Image (cartoon, rainbow, N blue to C red; front, side, top):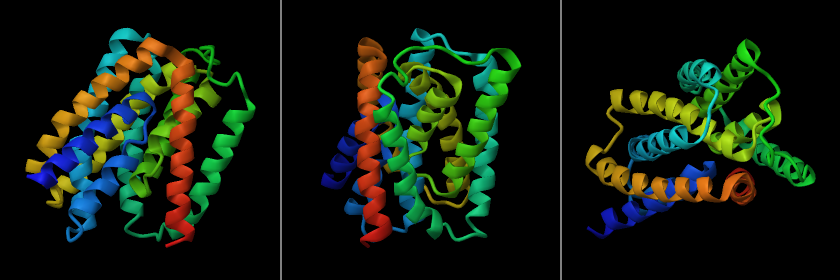
Length: 253
């Protein structure tokens, strides 16, 4: 019972953070590994996806009701992200991702420095493209980060947010809202693969899903209430935490 309560609370916190800017896996995945140290990693990753996808999907729905989104660009981008995630998951069975593990904290550090130096980055919503060109760029983002999510994964939501801000000219609120849709697609792809392999504890995932949605509801409301500046601040905090976590995993273990 204590184990279930622990992962339920971790899922609540993960849903809260993930709804604002992504990065909920920083909380939930370590919690699962701590509570179930003897479990197969694939099972814990699959159970994480089984619980977390519901909060991400709920956040997507809530943002869609309150934020005007370019559906002509996001729907094909979500499809590209789904396909990219499948290909990435297949590629990881053929290629060792250890090199990417060491490069990731450096890439995240570059993202953080760029964001801090560009004080106005993502504060105003000024889309650079329209129509087909916007859909093309969004789909390229979806395909690339979708592949990364299937192949490796940490920081996927933050990469989606950053690229929507940097390449498409979105503010952080619109970028986060858009990222939730694409992240739902990549999570669905990964969950399907884990489920087909029998790597999901559905009874644990069901409890986590409930608390994850509750956390997502709170996080979405805060983001919508306080706007792009608040989301930008959370982005900086989450990316900083990701740098520390991935740096430790890559160089200290």
